[in-house]
Amino acid sequence: MWWCLALAIVALARTDLASVIQNGSVWYDTAGQPIYNNGGNMIQEGDTFYWVGYDTAPGHTGQINLYASKDLASWNFVKTIIRRTGEFSDIWWAGRPSLIRQPDTGQYVCVFEADGPNWERHKIGFAVADTIDGVYHRANVQYPEPARSAGDISVYQEGDRAYLLATMDDDILGVKYRNRSLAIYELTPDFTAVQAKVYEGFRNVNGEPDWPPREHSSREGSHIIKKDGLYYWFSSGLAGWNSSATKYATAENLAGPWSSLQWLATDPFSMDSFNTQHDFIIPVAGPDGTTYLYVGDRYSQWTGFGTGRNIFLPLAWNDGVPTLVWQNSWSVPIPEPTGVALIVVGAAWLMAGVRWRA
Image (tube, rainbow, N blue to C red; front, side):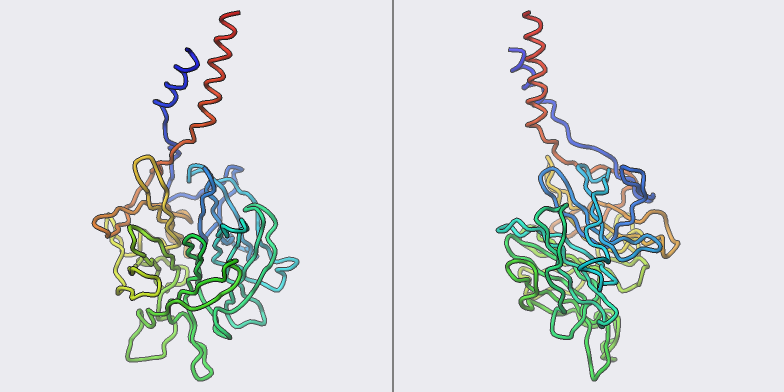
């Protein structure tokens, strides 16, 4: 009887993890080391969130790091998964990483910007591992299209399909014009190569259309989510390390047509998305619905403007229109796993009952 009562009490008293995200401050991992983790993505495995990014500490050597958390506020440094040694020794810059999992093979694939002294701007690197925190081996390095380089990249996955999102360069009459458009490419079924272009557009959206060609005229830092059957393609401006206003476009199909770019509204008003560059957005399922977590990069280590290097904020939605909401301190509602807790507490009550009977 006591055991059953204990189970009922724990089930009714289930709480949600509520560790606090502190924005506008320098973050440290659980070992007390400062976090320099930017330009990446996040995936959830069970009750654990894994956050991958490139190391942006002063004097960094182009490595890619992996962190883990159960509450999105307290982060444990897992390991450096890619560094400029061994099979990656010819890659002097490894940036903008994304982690995805191939559902059929169970392999984890890290897709990243790959640059080397003999290449003209970024190729796309692919590294694979059997476990998310395992040893990543080089699988492929290629341009998105033959001899056509890229700027910022990310990856969007939907089921057993994955897509490369890239800010693309153009070669015109022997001259390279960088960051001219946004493109989507479907990856091969094993997620280790570019298979086919799905869409390209938003060329020269930040430039003067009457002066083509023009360099640095599109968007970067882009990432796609899907909500209520509609794709949202978020991106940042081309502002170097500086913060910029986030914009987004929508479509019912990845191949388009895509809407024109719209400003991501902010509450309160901000001209530069609260001094951030858009990095990515991750949906987090909670007890009362899904929280859409905006992850912004604040490169204060390079610009000297503002405090902190990572900003996590909620998106509010009204009739399909997102608004970025500032929070100094807040918690993402995450359901606490209850199975193990029920067994442990129930066992404790049962043992207490055995001792009482004795």
